[in-house]
Length: 327
Image (cartoon, rainbow, N blue to C red; front, side, top):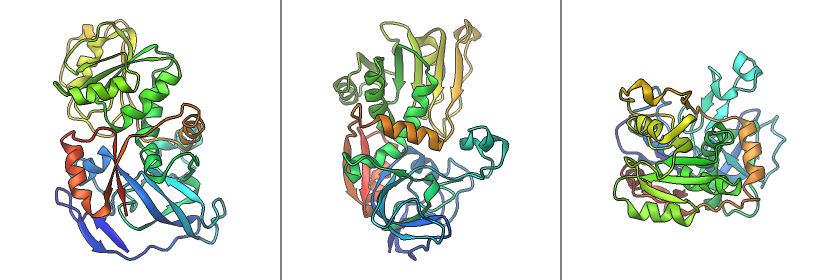
């Protein structure tokens, strides 16, 4: 099969012929129809996440069709359309797994990082960690829901009942979760790179009540803020923007260092938290909600061989919505 392979961090992916994998007991072999490109893929390729499996096929927002089952795999039949997320496996036995926090499992495996992913014609996945895809979505539209959507949804849940929510970094995750937030009656304030008027217009088209540069204070105090951009300097800016008792949620897997800031910006019971990975419960809840909104993912499609070019677009903030590779 054809695949884009990372042989060493900080080097381009290499297009190569790669052995088609065989599914083990609980696994399914999936013919990949679409794989969205996530900023996390960029963190893996750029060496910002430690100890990836090498050589590695990246990609963890996968939509495809089951073409072969492992000997114990019975959840999805041949021909079923499935989605493969970031969390690829957890042990089910540790204290985190036993308390509904499988996203924190010490032995967890992650698609496109410690397991081969979807920048290929075929991939294998543990069927217990896959999701059925609502029929209303095309393959390309569904792909970004598998991470941008799921991580965005987990970040949104951390905001509790916040009425006014600021989103810093209006990309793939933000454009999906803004729609979910509006569906729930929340007001979205969108923060973009300075001068990125295109992204600000895009945010307003999705229901944002205000859009401006990340260094700008919003016209009203926020009840919560979600930071999707991997920029630590946004944390104190977001703290300044939230009302007392508010929360700042860091929704990325990697972020540059957070600079020091005055304690008074945190005082009055403001809080900061991170979001790590996802659980299957997140996915089950999310995929019940998206058809009701209905969430519409804005996607640009590219051939698999263009993966390096697409990653560079993500690196420089030139993707509005989500980029999707089509094998």
